[in-house]
Length: 164
Image (cartoon, rainbow, N blue to C red; front, side, top):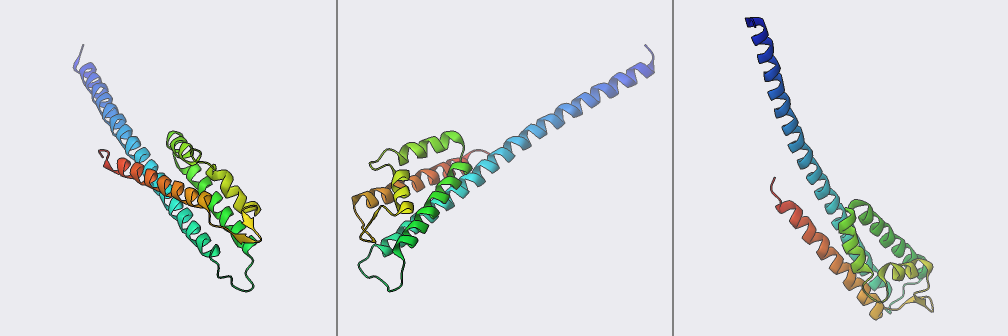
């Protein structure tokens, strides 16, 4: 072997080392990027859960005995139900499958099932004499959404605590 072969072999080894370092850095970047995406999506789910709770609070106002003239309660209750359903769909899209399975179990653990109860808002079957009646089902639904929000917040905190 002459000096030329040693030089080429040295360059090949050097290129291999740089390739390994580059692959390692790319893998680290990918993991951080993936973790950041999961955090952002979980944060989106948390914001949507806040919207759901705010919508339920608005529905409490609709259930009060003071009726404003010219208010179409059927349309307002239906619109609020659609808003809740839209937020649930965004949560479903944002969270990883395993995380949403936990939330789905929470939503379906109560009687009535929360999503089916929200559908009654959309269809208007929850109304009695065109008035929203705040009953135990509504309160259970609201409490389930509060529990869901706490679960999402816990997941958000766990994600943010992972090493960077």
